[in-house]
Amino acid sequence: MTFQQLGVIDPILRALSAEGYTNPTPIQEQSIPILLRGKDLLGCAQTGTGKTAAFAIPILQHLYLKHQNKQNHRDHRKIKALIVTPTRELAIQIGESFSVYGKHTGIKNTVIFGGVKQGAQTKILDRGVDVLVATPGRLLDLIGQGFISLKDVEYSVLDEADRMLDMGFIHDIRKLIALLPPKRQSLFFSATMPPDIVALSRKILGNPEKVSVTPDQTTAEKVEQAVYFVSKPGKTKLLIHLLNTLAMESVLVFSRTKHGANKIVKLLDRGGISAEAIHSNKSQTARQRALGNFKSGETKVLVATDIAARGIDIDELSHVVNYDLPNISETYVHRIGRTGRAGFSGIALSFCDEEEKAYLRDIEKLIKQKIKVISEHPFLNYKPEVAAKDAAVPYGLRKKSKPANSGGGGSRPKRRRPSGRKTP
Ligand code: AMP
Image: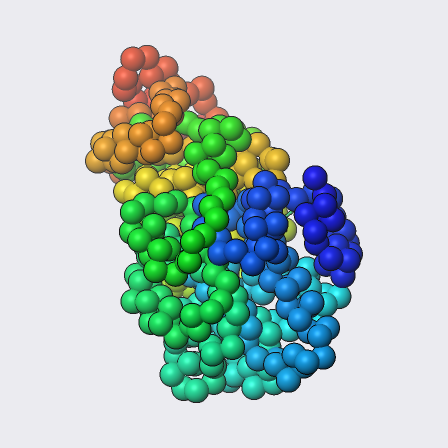
């Protein structure tokens, strides 16, 4: 199947071919014909499947064909397509995708998100755009101030709806839905479809067609998963040990909290491993810089909270490490979906302490498979008092010694201080 066979028009085909897109991804193959027929769409797909192009291409195509019609010319530069997405990183990426796929169409887009001054954003809005990509808070704010009207919106996209709800945007979403004209084509994407998401989709969509690229298939097929049982205080030691012994090129480590993320980075740093953290306490510039350093290979490890990691677009990620197991099983699927993208095989390693065993059971239920347990590691029953004695020498800086045989559960590693090595 080619994009041409899906009915995509020449100016967009040229842009796609310049991007090196030879064939549509499954979500694109399913969605584009439905959307070109003008139907509403309920899409079950996560980031990394090509879902942005799946909705951006038909929207650009519709708008381009209407623009060519002179009678509609006075509608030029009114917001005709609205894409609402939970994070600024996602918003920026979606805006960039519209610019890339639409570069021969003359269709203008802009991106608005919170956390930065609004002046630059309202200036662009004043000049007029066809496509607006927005996070919910800033969008409502600018609507309230009169900078944005949604009355000409013909296409609305709610992206990552499950994330949106997780992040507490439900009230904002309800307000936005009420402001949209009833006659429009609506698209709704979510990686998971729990009952509250299905209920929300019913409020937005009129008799939608459904497409699905199920996340558990992606997980099962592409990502090799393993779990390490480890005590809470042994987790950093285990991480450093794995980074020093396995071929881990570019690693995304998930931490449940911002504080935890900072702490992991500090300890990795002390262990001589380049790492940076991204979370919402970091400025947008700091986050972009950290992401840039990671993508260029300057830092090997990026430690992120779930919210900060949403929408990060890194195709060639070798490993995802769940330093903390998420209490929401769907989050696990999201996390490990960061690796194993675009045909790359990926590896997801999870650390599970005593308190997280119930989370692991829930995850295995959701993905309908048992995750392989790796018990051959030196930190199975790691105790903090031993850590205190040894704290002066981070594990990663010690001579690589053979991992102690953990035979049947829980011998501690023999702690040998390397002779002649100064403590850092
Ligand atoms: P998305 O799920 O929209 O975040 O897209 C994931 C990645 O796949 C992005 O880096 C896109 O540029 C890339 N991509 C999307 N569609 C295609 C395609 N048909 N062929 C090759 N790469 C694609």
